[in-house]
Length: 241
Image (cartoon, rainbow, N blue to C red; front, side):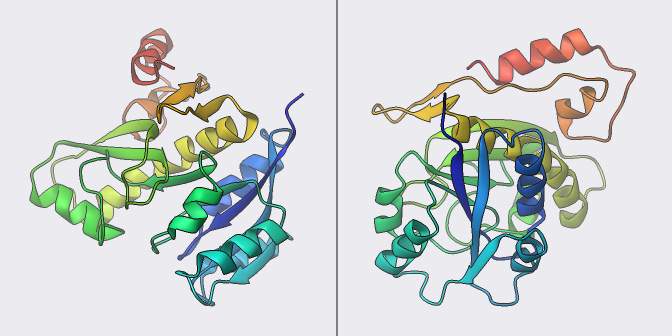
C-alpha cells in the first residue's frame, strides 16, 4: 500500500491553485496525501491566509535563494513532495536536487512556448495575444534547475477567442488550471505518475469523465450537450499515459 505523501506548497499570490489542492486532498484524494505546510516569499500572500484557515502550518521564506534553509524547513515539516502554486521565485538547485522527481509546477501556457524568466501572470497572456496564437493552455511539469523547462506531466489546450483581453484569457486558462492541477499532484502523490531515471514521465493520469466532461475539451464553461465518447477519445489522445 502506498504511503500518503506529505505535501508542501510554495505560493507567492492569492492562492487559488492552492485552494483547489486543499479541497482535493481534503476530499477525493485524501488517501493519497495531505498538505502539511505552505510557504511564501511574501508575508501578505493570500495563500498563507487560505492555508491558515484550513489549519495548515505556514511560513514566510525570508531568503528564497538559501537552499539549505529552505530544505531544512521542508524537512522539518516532514514534506516529501513539493508543489509550486504560483510561486514566482526560481527554486534553488539544492532544493531541486533534494526533491528530484517530487517537485511540481503549473504554468498557464503550453510549454515550452511562453515560459521562462519573467513570464508570469498577465505577461504570459499578453504575449500569447501579441503573437496571434489561437491556442494556449495549461502545463503541469516536474521542476528542474531552469524556469519552466522540466519534463511535462500533462497539458490541456484552451482556445484564444476573438475579442480576448489578457484578463479574459487568464480567467479561461485558470479554470483549466483548477481542473488539471489537483489531478496531476494526486497522481504523483500516489505514485501513479513518476519521473524516471531517463528524465521521462511514466505512469497514468486518470481524467474523470462525467456529464460536465465537454468543459475539459477547451477549458470552457460546462456543456452537457457534448458527446462523452468523443471526449474520452480526446482524453486518450492528449493523455496517452
